Length: 489
Image (cartoon, rainbow, N blue to C red; front, top):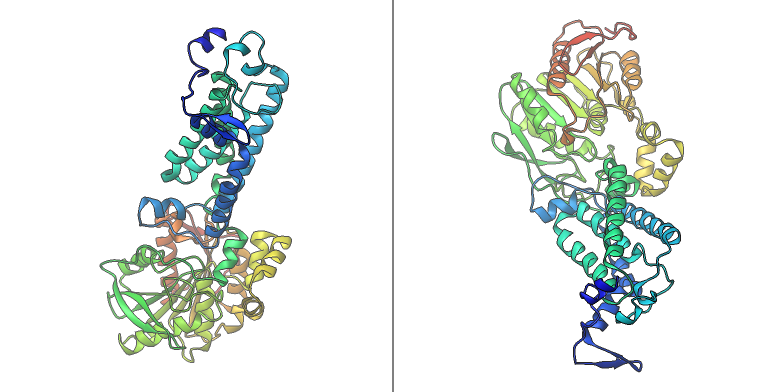
């Protein structure tokens, strides 16, 4: 160790001739800077500010399509999960360092009898254990987490961790190997917790979820482009919005996306209908797509938006309702059900993909009873009351002229197959099961195009009058019987 000190690795003589006093203690500028960097108390305001900023970012639902690398980086992760990773990684690295220090029991260089005279001791220190450096480990845990979550901040975060480690060596309280070991422990701890929570990083969580009912969400960075054509729509309650239309014939599919979706997210499944010879109309909803109404109601009020699209389709575009089909995904399916019930005339068909009988019943299936209660407490009172009384099946029209199709994924935890089976059995219609499929989330690219194309095809055949019993569709698009379901006419 004496050789290291003599070689300058511990930087015993890096002081300038300029000195000044703080509280009667004489410092060089470099020593003062190093002491400032190494003092954890000086970082507390910055960490508190960073935590508050993360929590503020967590108020909105992330959009990740398009935009600069900074926008993509800060919109693609749930800040609360990032914060959780930071806390756990730092706590774990600190505990590992504590136990290693107790077992290794190596003295700090400034207290080591053999070399203490060769080390310029410049710092205040608690304890006499050197290996590894907890300061370095904790700073590396924070820096690695920030770098993984927000790559544009990686250079700054890593530079801060390097400065913290350097300050520990400069001040004579750690050997270089202590700092290297600390950095390794902190980085490995951050990577471990990042891998554990990586699947949760794109989820908004309960708070982010309920904030869709409270504050305006960011507008997506992109909207459907050519061949989609923008169309001006006025909702039934007078709000101006922009839908997107693709003309291919006299038969029309009006598509309604779900909560957290957008007109962009359903454009790709809309192209499947278009290739089958249908004109397609994508409907924007309040609380989404830059709609003038900033927040969603979860379904009850979005019917006004669909009504505006229907009026546009009948008036400007000249489509008749007997040649029009409503397709709804998740929340969009219950909106379509309600609209069909109050329209006053039959439509050709309703395709309900991921429909549920009640919002809170679906929430309990997904979250469990306790978290559902928390969800109800977090929701604004008016939204909660509207969702409690909103029963989409109350609006199902028993007219033989309107044919219903209920599509559900076998692995759907929000609207499981039993929900579609019950609706199809009680009110008449076709039930289509999607093997291995979950709740429809189009913008996540977790869906099989052959499977969805086959499900759409069999749905349209049923709506056109063909007698089909309930079926299942595998991921390759192969249609087979669903044996546990009785034939439904």
